[in-house]
Amino acid sequence: MRFTKRLGLCAAVSAGALLVSLTMHSGAARADDKSFVMKITLPTLNDAPHQYAKDYAAAVEKDSGGRIKPEVYPLSQLGSIPRQIEGTQFGSIQCAIIPPEFFVGVDERFQIMAAPALIETMEQGQRLAQDPAVLKLMLGLGANKGLHGAGLFLAAQSAIISRAPIRTLADFKGKKIRIFASDFQSVAFERLGATPVAMTLGDVLPAISQGTIDGAVAAVPVFTNLHFQDAAKYVVETHQPAIFIAVELSKKWYEGLPKDLQDIVDNDAKKVGVAINPWATDYDAKARGVWKQSGGELVSLSPTEQSAMMETLASVGEDVAKKQPALAEAYKIVTEAAKRDR
Image (cartoon, rainbow, N blue to C red):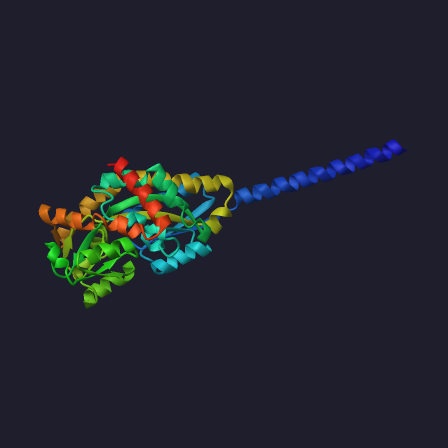
């Protein structure tokens, strides 16, 4: 009788264990089958960041087997750049593709890629964006402020659109120039004799049209795609600073993904960051042609003036960085990488 009771008890325990196992397995399966919306936001349209966003979305959806459902929102459809960053921090937006300088309120070191004289060509900038030491630095920023760095790439070298032509360094004197939110850009333009005005992209065209500012830093593809020639026709190609793009994920959203999906969004961000390089180089060249065809003028400083500009800006990076130990260390990492990647 005792044996029969023990046998019955063992059977009940085994059945219970089997039920628990099946329940856990079923729960895991349901978690694996769950789909995740991924809103991808950016401030521009039909340029390298937009192409990156579309390619990244396609790669993530394919590699996740449709478990991640990306949605791409260009041209600040989800709000101004500050709102896009806040949304990503708090999780209402899952991915932001924005120049890192605009994250300076999250961490001062985000602006380090805007230091002048880091690179001279697109190819150098593309190599710098994939340097392991630079990636380790940049992708780790913002981790304590709701962000998870996933990628970094070069969109273009910068240019300045202006209502009146800038053909010499003297032409910068007294002009109000829109910049990104970076001390490196602010100090650089002050040394050129201009008044820097930090401004998000959505406000730039009205400000130029109304004469609130005299010019603005951006990339030639941005000027062509957003029809800036209706407000100003002159673009001087200073190539300083380079315009890098950070790919930041919502840490809250990222940590809610299963491990295999975390690996997918990380790996695809880096793969697309390399794959976009030939497209970005080619598109930048095409945009320059479109600008001229639409009635705009491309201006280059003379070799003498360009050399004088670079000499004026040569110490900006070190002078700005030395004010803060963490920024100085980041500047050292990036400038040493830039030397390796020349």
